[in-house]
Image (tube, rainbow, N blue to C red; front, side):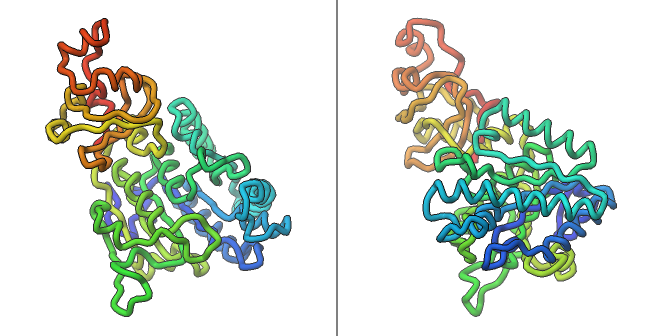
Length: 377
């Protein structure tokens, strides 16, 4: 059984494991104080879900906004990296204490996890995070997750909790992701336009869908926007995970959205295995290869990537890294685990298999990226 409607997110048979993401605009008042009464209703919904047998993971923003108020930092704590890191450190204490208290009132235990991009990009750390999530859920706890902004820099951070929520859903083998935000869903044009309409369902995020979004956060408190939510939907849809954007401003926000049947549901487009889901969800790369049209056609026919099809190499990657694969126009078409270092790829690009051995001076590997380690986008 799979998720086909918004109501299915509350169905324990169709969605036994659910990730709920709460944006900063929902969690924090203008003065930097958490919306305690609203959070209490969310905790009530989490408890109700646990009572009917669902396992719940919460991805919670707001630490920077809360901490900035506590420390008296200007600009919501985002004027400098040092301000943001300090604000996150102070704010996270408040948020996790609040969650622990609210969930305890329902007999539930909160388990905190602070993650950086590296924690989910590196295979070993990804597996460690996955195992921690599974153990917390098995013990009946509710994992409360946020990006570890107190140590994250621009090079090692997600930058928004939407994609973090999608990656956490992958790691936890969740069935669905609910992104609670201050809008009702994805509109077909600027929501301020009088003829703007919400898209109730999306079957695959396309370039046309991306054109409907804006990359800005309407509240000014968060770091995401509709663009980040679409990027999260792309990660989820390839992993067989349904994702929905719903308005979360009201008390008991999930129940309100379900009752109104209002929001945008992104349906899975395929169901990659765990290995390919991890590759496909990668957000950072040490390099890329550019391939010709013949190679593009071969990849879409299920072939491996061979040196003969490579027309360009960039970056400083090593064997075993996940790199980008670009078409002749530079458009990203795939991600894959590369079998050669960057300098070897540069040396053998455009060569047929028998020429590769001569150029390298040793028996070559069967391909540059094997189809089992390649994810088409």
